Length: 75
Image (cartoon, rainbow, N blue to C red; front, side):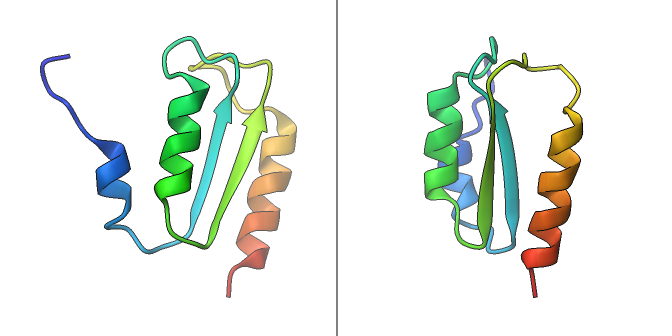
């Protein structure tokens, strides 16, 4: 890519809630980069790990349960 966007540096500027999901089998963005981004984010945050999805696959039904639980946990 000719344009770089350093998400790890930028996420520190955001102070709102974050629900991040990522699959261990993503063939475009390595799982380790997702973990690094999540570590740099402020609370409140939640990470949802998938193990059998690729980058452009649809979220499975349990994602919506995770989303609902995350939203309910916010003030």
